[in-house]
Image (cartoon, rainbow, N blue to C red; front, side, top):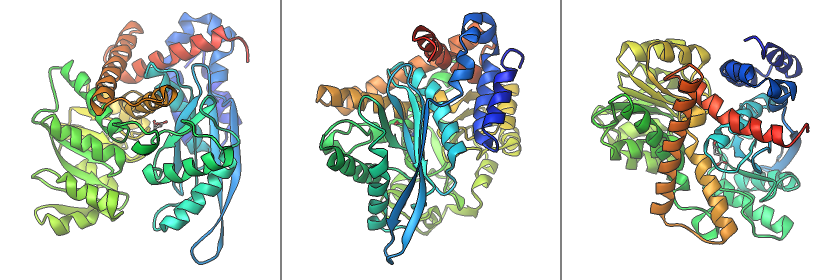
Length: 444
Ligand code: GLU
């Protein structure tokens, strides 16, 4: 890094100890060096130094009472990172690992991801260190209501539109939306991922997983390959992993392994998705229970061991940095020829480097998993029109968006001398649009 070295230095200095944020920014700045060379006017206008600094960061206390009558205190966050091309848009994550650095890495990625969708949405992210695991419905509701009590002051359908992420699905969006509506006395599309009877979009639930497969199918086809007949490992068993698995099966592939934070299951005959959906979506159980219903399957403790399973295609769809250099080496040695990131930043920098060096077809998160937020933007459009499209209409739009993201990322990679490097291509293509908007809007 030459021109942008001082930008990275400043990020580290200004945000000490936020390692995930450093990791996300450093990968992007490395890709953008040729862009900085070509656009000295953007360097002069401080675009690179500005895009790494959130426009606004809100940190707040969330107090709620648990089922035993004890007062609980959590920390809430909303980082409104960049609004150059549209209202801030991005999910809310509820997980004990959440801190400002995690939210900033996610928010930063979201700027470029949202730009890649081609739709008018800026970048933001939020959440809390609240741990939903083992909590009753009542506790989840009281937490969400108290979280929204503060968040409602900072969001709005034309300002900032949150959605789900890890730990936030349909149930939580319902509690959050209900409280927003009560506080503001208005029924607007302020959140996405809503229930179908109250403003949600068909296909939003499936969108991240389906979009991941549509993107990867494009990338695979360009290399004369496809999901058809492929053996696939999908880490995670949340919303992204479940619908990626469903689409892989529809496209003629076979998912043989899935995981949760405790361990992974291996079913050589192909994962029976209805069992996973029942265990995870309805009963909120551990994945180890799967083997009680399918005795030919095995369960192994330790979620990162899933990458020891021999597969043709890997879809890491659990969480950040879940696939390291060692895991990448094992996958490559076992003949894995494609990796598509369903989670945000699931591969460590070392793993990404190995995939690119070894010519593995690699779909980076901000391109490959953009289908979720793209469909959220379609939900916003439907809300503005007070109208709903059919499942087929939304799915067709999603497919088209994913194909365009692939095209734009691969063309940008080629144009900037990095053919086949979709990491560089996605970073550059996403950045160009935001940078040009920031430049046109003046020094702010
Ligand atoms: N949390 C998802 C993401 O990482 C979706 C965000 C949204 O729909 O706004 O992109």
